[in-house]
Amino acid sequence: MKILIVGGHGTIGKRVAVHFEQNHEVIIGGRTKGDVLVDIAESASIQKMFDQIGKVDAILCIAGEAKWANFKELTEEDYYIGLKSKLMGQVNLVRLGQNYLNPNGSITLSTGILADDPVVKTASAAMVNGGIHSFVQAVALEMEQGIRINAVSLGVVHDAYEKYKDYFPGYNPIPTSKVINAYIRSVQGKTNGKIIRTYE
Amino acid sequence: MKILIVGGHGTIGKRVAVHFEQNHEVIIGGRTKGDVLVDIAESASIQKMFDQIGKVDAILCIAGEAKWANFKELTEEDYYIGLKSKLMGQVNLVRLGQNYLNPNGSITLSTGILADDPVVKTASAAMVNGGIHSFVQAVALEMEQGIRINAVSLGVVHDAYEKYKDYFPGYNPIPTSKVINAYIRSVQGKTNGKIIRTYE
Image (cartoon, rainbow over all chains, first blue to last red; front, side):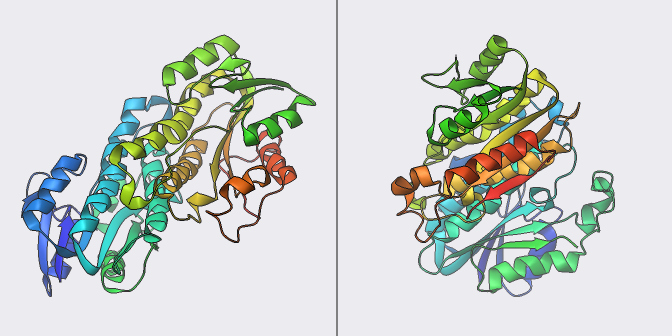
């Protein structure tokens, strides 16, 4: 398969990329480095990326940001960081990417446990994750030519546990093998419209 | 109690308003008519409303729109209709409204079954509903002075069943009494951070 991994140089993305590179042609998309440069917060940048790489069999998005802050401190503009990047960035990747997928291809978006089980300071981050969960289920009803779409929703991954553990007291770190498996299930399984929750 | 119902002249809002008016002081907010005019898609309009009415004991939002269309036809701009109105409109109502609630007051937002169980043409509408579900759970962790926040998520209500039934084949219409009860649970119960799902 020809697999595009947007965010393939990130903490999670690089682990997933190393796995798929064993048996597939992987194209890494990134904001500052990669086989192709892309900023998902700009739909023109997404279109330019697809113009460069052409058709693929799978699109994985392991990218997107949102502002973390106390609810009382989050401004209206702060919310738009997440809305433009992790929410509409992923929506636009599907909207534009559907035209660059071969039949029976797949799209895998990334969210997180905050959608279901938020913690303090995540009003914006939880919101965009929850939005993607419902979006994926809705869009799956309308995909054509056997194209599937899923979201991988992860807990606090082992590789980022030290950075985030104070925000997530008592949450179990997710081993890298389970993280990779979640993406494998989406790309190589037949699941469609599924939120692949990997929280333990 | 002094209760603000934004969207209190709408299909659902007017039923809820009639109930609470029996025993409470109800202020109806609406875009074109009401005790106070407000367009939730504009945060300045929300602030102006609160400047006019002062402190309240409960805020209900039964308003907000999103574009319904086939996924292939939804433009990036189309998504922003829902993001600015039903999503950020409700977020801004909480963000600004928290300063106008008396201690132990409550905020009740409105979503719908699409968040959990979407149908065709609802990629945008489902997304904003799902976003609010996660937002409510996150914000509930940070509310102060006993202020609570919940969302009422309704199926296809009886009053709008004829209009929407072709989108929702086999879905059961929700009787008005159950709709009203969902809002009563949020306003008069002790629940916080709950999605009050009323789908049958």
